[in-house]
Structures are given as structure tokens and as C-alpha cells.
Image (cartoon, rainbow, N blue to C red; front, side, top):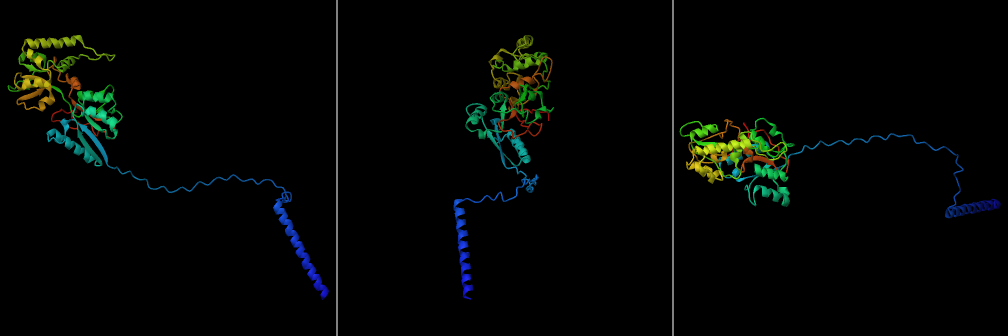
Length: 375
């Protein structure tokens, strides 16, 4: 029994020594980082090929219901001259307001702001356009009513936009020929006419005689015919010259005067003076208002004037007719309307393209100006 116990103790002691030895070897291997190469212990094998995997298409996210744009309130700024002041209480003003109401009924989301500006001067329409474009372009008008001469200047300076890409309203057939000429500068549409001012003959209709349709009839009645004979622009003479198909521009775009046509007009003047139809005192009149005053004071029975002058005056027993021409052509003087210095004939998109003219009808401010269409 004693021998067996000693052998058992010796066996335990040897196991402890072996265990400590293995532990010491492991510690030495770790600290020296000198691990045995175990790659050779593994059997060599070819690299594993990874098969081509077609990536799965991502699961589509459900799209949200598209938002339907809600038209918010927008502002339409309109500049007009005093003639169309919507607050002056005139018939023209009431017609203007009714037209604005009709527009608002179709576009209730649009807030219309009408601003009245003088035709000329420091705060006039054209000068205000120039100043506003530089100082505060955000408040430039969307639409502006301009007479033809101011429209030309504004268009040439880039203050208003050509309308050909915005609307085709001027392609309609209901426009008077003078309105079509007012609308265009070169080959571009610079504005949409909404009212016109036409050269007409005013005459006293006391005897119920028909108005003279031609030059021979004017000479035959031997009654004084008033017009601004000293007008610096000679618009009456220009109208009569063009009624004879007199040209103002040649094929190269240069200004010309046809000698034969002009001589016919001057010969008519000479004959009218000899018949006391155009007396010498007509040379005192430089403006339309001076000639019209002469007619109102009954110094003359006939007067060549503008429709706006007649329609805005209290002149009893006065009737309007076409300006007498050599061959009684009632439309022969329409071309001159385009050069009328104070002609109110255009509604122009100024900067923003948000407005498209809704129809082919003139807006109808017809109390003093004339309509631009036949409808």
C-alpha cells in the first residue's frame, strides 16, 4: 500500500511538470510571433470560383400620389394713361372696369393692379419703364397701354417683348388694316391694338346733304375746310399723299417721296385755296385742336380731324365721314393712323410672359377711341 501511494504521487508530479513545460513553450511562441507554418499541413486546392450573380433589382418604392399644383394668387400689373383711368367715372372708365371684371371672372386667382401714369414727362409711361427696369425690375408692369410712337421707342430699347411666340391673335381676320399696321414693327408683333384713333372728316349736317366723298365734291361745295395746315408732321398732307399710293420707303428701306403723287396733292391745295375752301388763315393752325376750335366757332363747315377729338367734344349737328380722297376711297387714309402722335392703340406685354391675350376681340374702350376689330 505504501508503494502504490508513492507511485501515485510521482505520477501527479510528472503531469504537473509536463503541463508547466507546455505552457512555457506556448508563452515563448506567442511573444516571438514565430508561429509554425501550417499552410504546408493543408492539402493544396484550386481557388474557389465565385459564380456570376445577377444582382436582384431593388424593390421599387411605391410612388406617392403626384401633387396637383394649386394655382396660387398672382398679380397682374397694368399701366395705363389717364385716358383709361378706371376711377375717373367716365363711360370709358366704366367700360374698362367691366372688361377687367370679365377677365377676373375667368382668372379669379389673378389680382389686377392698375396704375395710371402720364403719357410723357419725368413720371410718364416710357420714362417710368426705363427707371423701373434699372431700379426695381421686380415691379415692372406685365401689360402697358402705349401710343404707337412710345411703343416703338419701348420696343427698340427692349422694354417690351415681341408677342409672336406668346399669341397668334393678330393672325385673326377681324382686325382692321390700320390696327394690323399699328401692331407690327418690322416683321414682329410689338403690341395688340385695343383702340384706335382714325383721321376723319367732320361736317355740319344741317342741310342733310351727303358729305363730299372726293376732291371734286369738296371744291364744288365751296365751304371752308379746316385742318392744321402748318402741322410740323404734315399728317393731312401725308394721308392724301398715301391715298394716291404714294410710297414712303423704297425696296432698300430708304425714305422716298414720289414727286408725281406729292404734286397732285399740292395742286389740289392750290385749287382749294382758289375756291376759298382752304383759305390762307389755315396756315395759322399747327395743331388739331386749333383747327377743331375753328370748326366749333363755325369759321369752317368742314374739318379734317381725329375721331377722338370729335367723340370727346360737344358738337351738335356734326357727323363724321371718311376723309375725301381723289377717287373716293374711304380706306385710303388708314395708313396714316399708324403715325398718329397721340394714338392710343396698343396693349403690350412688357416683361413677364404670364399673360396671353384671350381672344381676337378688341377690349372695347370705344367711348373716345375707335375699336380695332370689326367685332
